[in-house]
Length: 550
Ligand code: AMP
Ligand code: DBH
Image 1 (cartoon, rainbow, N blue to C red):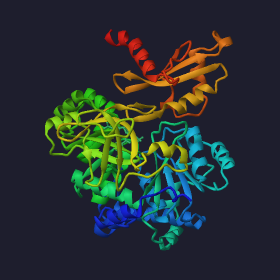
Image 2: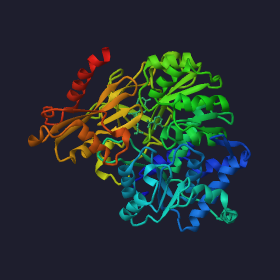
Image 3: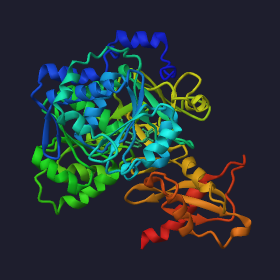
Image 4: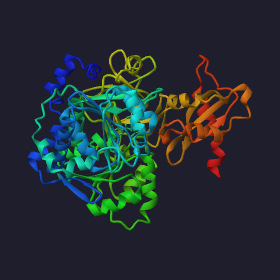
């Protein structure tokens, strides 16, 4: 069932194999290679603790063995929600070894998001962090169990009195050596390895099936483009679950290249700068708001950051001004990365000229990526014109999980994924992101589907109608603005404070909360009767303009 959504044609599969893009290896073989090559090499440094490749392999095998003894088996599903830490990777490889299909939720995902993933995957297992407010006692887990016929196992990182602790399962009991002998079967690399999360533009978050063959290729090709090797020391400061720090080339790229990954809890200068100097970090990846914070802090910082060679920036558009400042201040090469959890990843190359590095979002990483920039009738636009980016290739997915209807519009008739990004090509063939034609807000790299927030607001009894749009923000690029039409008889009762309290009570991730509410008597409509979000964006931009110039 879970594999039924993948539909590369036989001809495509044949081509991708013959060209060596698909090598029919599973993601856990990324780790296996290093265990054979250099088991004593440090793979991960977390909070000063160094873990070798041998250790990562052994501990993920132990965990897999423990889970197998509990009755979990290939094809089962799991929800994982862990912070940036060594255990994230132990769990990732343990589940890969068992062929348990997981989705990695972000730490700031809340009740609504996790409940949705449970509904979508009917998991047997939840692995989470004991410090997360939802897992301080068993009540949320029990609620999840009541929504799911399979959910019987939970493991937590950290101590609680209600659930087993992952680390204890890994390190404490000698009897866990038993599990090292659990034989793991080889699985079909055309199958789903795990699900990535889409930023989405619809009412409910969508799950993206990523297969071993496609994801492994995207990691290998990223390593090649970025020229990573065993000397790579990568600081993972963005959320570990995100596609960017996981695969572009990210953590899996580090492990494939035999380098060392250093975990940072978040991308703030105070958490990253000491780690960079202590561990001689030479690569990292950031979103644009973090770049601004790094630039602000650099002058005052006493940390020696001279080991840094490359800073990747992606997730949202970086301004040329910040791009130039970043390179000058930190004496690094900037690599712009324009990617998507659905597949296609574009990189500026390390030897691209200044103009390309500062002003473009790169070009596809693979010669097999096909991109078409089209108008609303799916006709290719002429050179220099802005159009919608559509793409297909050996690592771009073929359809969201259980979303037949949505998939009809997410792909063109000729099978290209419609990214919803408005782009143009530079004179040298690089992509420049000009905007977006999807109902989404990109808050400094965190994507918010407007409809998801609107649905929550519409549940308020005094809200007649609403529309959520992006408003400009000098640090985050965009923030969330909700235009709300009150019910006729409740004109006075409904306040912004009440709406704020209401949305906070709904169990939505807090980065999705509207940053501003605007009451309006009616939503403007386009000629065809749709809500005119462009007019609303203009409206809030004009309202903000005087504030900006103060
Ligand atoms: P997601 O589908 O959640 O993985 O988000 C991918 C989307 O993030 C892309 O389709 C773009 O809209 C946006 N994005 C990612 N990287 C960049 C970038 N470097 N510049 C502009 N937008 C970006
Ligand atoms: O924003 C993204 O989703 C993204 C950005 C850079 C991504 O998925 C990636 C690189 O792989």
